[in-house]
View 1: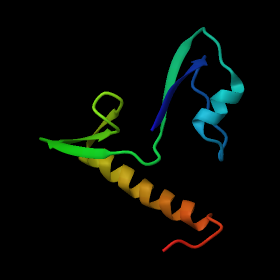
View 2: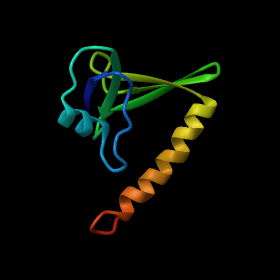
View 3: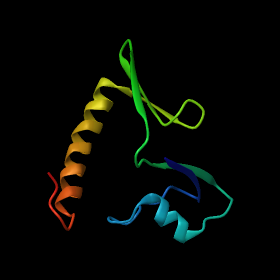
Length: 100
């Protein structure tokens, strides 16, 4: 897992349609000022666990000391699943070779 945070001067900017947030801000080289922070995480192949607490689900990506916790409501998790499934289909369709 690779994680980072990005500082932005002024308001958060929209990234171009086909450019990831880390790559966009890496090229822009923002400085200090009216500070806003955008965080990003690249997940490749790492451990992932979840726990259900009342009306929320907590996901832990990575280890206890080097991980990231994400907390979802039911609606938030449903939105992630819906968009995640669409994104996975699109990503696989763009691959040069077919996947099983």
